[in-house]
Image (cartoon, rainbow, N blue to C red; front, side, top):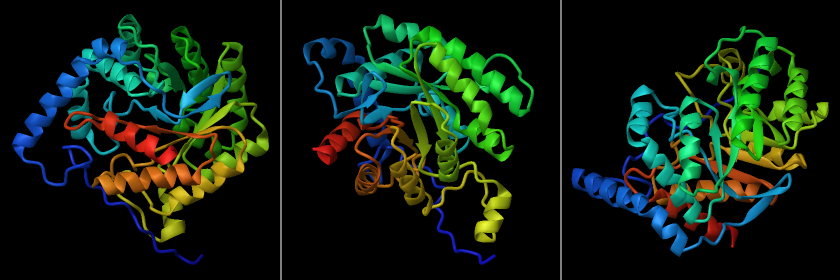
Length: 337
């Protein structure tokens, strides 16, 4: 098999001072952190006085979701870099800051939050609602987020997904999605049909059912099988590519989580080929494409130009050192005007 040369996104951390700066000083860090924190604290009061004009929306079942959906990876310390960066995020996103953060997102015109079902989410969601935040909730379900062990088998994955969906329903999500890493593992085992049980169960719970994947070929296979789901969550990068696949495609393997620059066009082509709404994610390669404001803009622009008008993007926001909420919502308004 002919080996193809691969171009890999460099595994360097994003600029911590936000997406507008390339060389912050310590003073910039401190000033930015203070300013952003002050803005978040003020969000609940400002929200009532200045109702947000929603960003452009698309249909998701009977609901309308903004074409920019805020993700939860930074909130819950899933940096997709290393444990130190995970801890950096977890340290900042306290319970109170999460509440203030979502109120600020809502105030800026975002009406939907996609979050994994986990221990912190369960504890914080009542606080979010008690603060008056009405942001819609899409849940990403996985058995490994439960305080329970399931067999490491396709059937064990299915049972964990079913139990997680049942637990998540208590928080009234507008959609519950099958975790992408689990989808991809079931595909490798030749057991994609087990996802039909998940879809049926979620529908019985009275909400829309989604399926997530990182692989455009799996998206195509899911469509061929007519799983009965209402939407997809689709990663721009095939993060679950196995070492053997790397070797076959490129004649080499990566170290850690590797992002291949030729992946997004392939997923976008698969997304355009399906009629159901797709919520694309990792459009910034988990922060690897945040080196400058221009790079961020080009990444957002590529995403919205190459998915369907009925699709949306899930983007993680980490406003520790700059007002990324305003930066991202302003950019989306400009691009979709």
